[in-house]
Image 1 (spheres, each protein chain N blue to C red):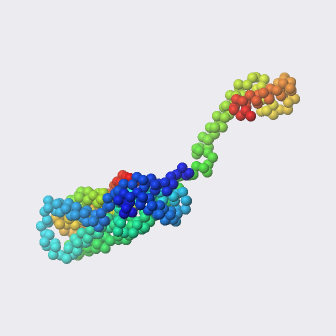
Image 2: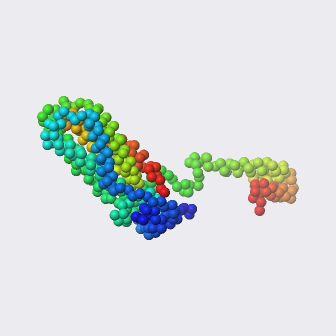
Image 3: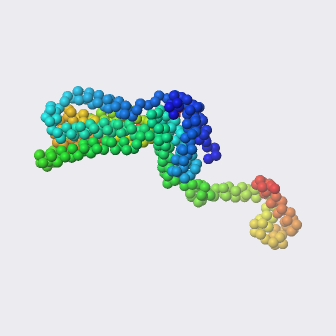
Length: 224
Length: 172
């Protein structure tokens, strides 16, 4: 214990090796940058696959519109919250920002399930597999989440886990919204199952792998 | 801090020095052990250094410093909590191995050394030592058993002890 470096000496060392740094862009700007990247990537995917044939009819249903807007809102709010939480001095309350749109999104999906049951009969008849949804959200969502975490890697020593989860949520929500534009899925329970399931899987994946990205003590940015 | 971001070492030094008492108060409030708290302060200083480009000069510096220090103090507390659950302080035990028999090695070595030293003594001294010191017989009986005179026994015992002391490195 006696051989320990004294804090005053540490300050001296840190100050003597000081090099100028470029100030990081404000968090809102970082979130905007990532959203632009995500919209471009998802837009490209939509262009490649083409809009779904019944999109016009879908957009006339207010419930579908609410659901879509809620998923987009979840993505935007989660991205902004992640960027804010990555800064040490921002309030942890930012983490609550995506909860209202997320609740609305899940509620509209749940309500859609109930409406479908009333309209089409028992839920078993509507179940099917849609590996395409899962694949799309994972294949596009994982790189997008990774890009956001790379942009926000300074969150590592501050609040790594909330930022990880919010980043995955933002990616999954936006991918789900993009998927709705071109992929034909009628039953709300299918959307809930495959979009929601994919979102959860992406969340788990990010939580598992993202630790390495954010929690390594000095990989992202060495002191100096 | 804005000056420090531009590379002004003087400003940076005085900022950290001025903040140090506050960082210490924050760390001590969370961690009771003073050495551990000081470690947390140093962790915080390193984090502040590493994240200095994320500070926004338009916002007050104090909450930024406080938040980072709180985080490092909590991290350190968690780590020491985990360690305490996994490790046992070694000073509480005189022995280093959990198997009791494994800790007698030193005694065994000492016994072997002593035996070798005794074996190296001349026959008369060995007999005298064995009778007078190990079996603790009165000198008269030892003399009767060994056929040596009491005086010779005394001298032989004395010499034997002296030789052993010399050999085992406890010469006074």
